[in-house]
Length: 68
Image (cartoon, rainbow, N blue to C red; front, side, top):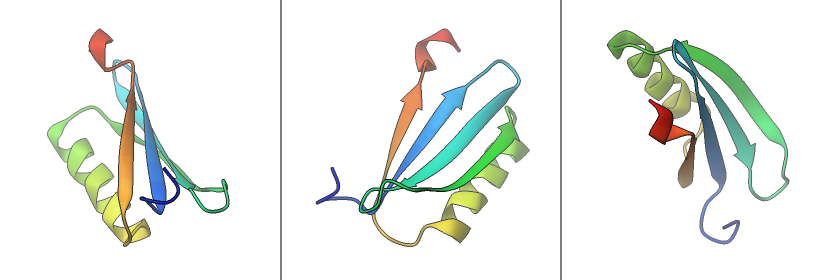
C-alpha cells in the first residue's frame, strides 16, 4: 500500500463516537488521532480534520462497520 498511498486513515467505530488515526505509510508513524461524535456535524468535523492534515493520496480503513 505504501507505493500507492501516502497515508492510511484507520477508523474505529463505536456507538457514540468514531476514532480516526492517520498513519504515514512511508514511515509507519501515526501522525494524528482524533475522536468525533457519530452525527452529521461530527462527520463534517472528521472530514475537515482529514483535509487539514493530509493533502496527498490516502486510503481509509473502517473497522467493525458491520456492527453499526
